[in-house]
Length: 148
Image (cartoon, rainbow, N blue to C red; front, side):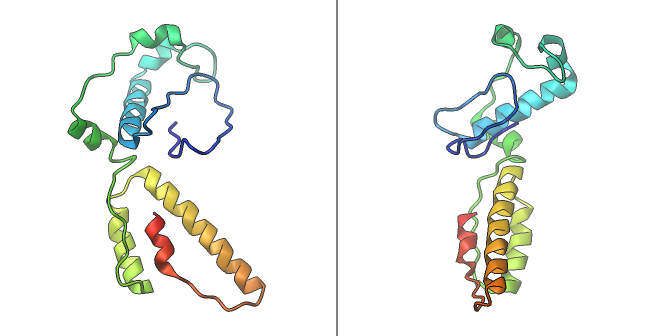
């Protein structure tokens, strides 16, 4: 599991080790996440994990993991399905342009960016619904899309 925004405090029921990049490099983090999932899918982690229900990878077994050295370009190619840094700027802030540009951009961005986008949109929709419930005039400023 990869947490996209490590600066937020997160409580989980995950038992085991948390890998945390000090520089919060999302591309490298996504690459390591992808590679560990690859090892899990191959069944490698089943042999070196301890505990039940999927187990955890105890520190004493870390030396058993061989993560290959890939160039930055290769890491980015692998990680882009999780995190693909692209500029998200909606030009011509009308609804039709927003929909078309958003559909095109969603073809390029990674899962983490899609998740962040959904959370921002959900919050915006809640704000609009509250405005409607309160009987206030609804004004939608599409500049919020710049925060994706």
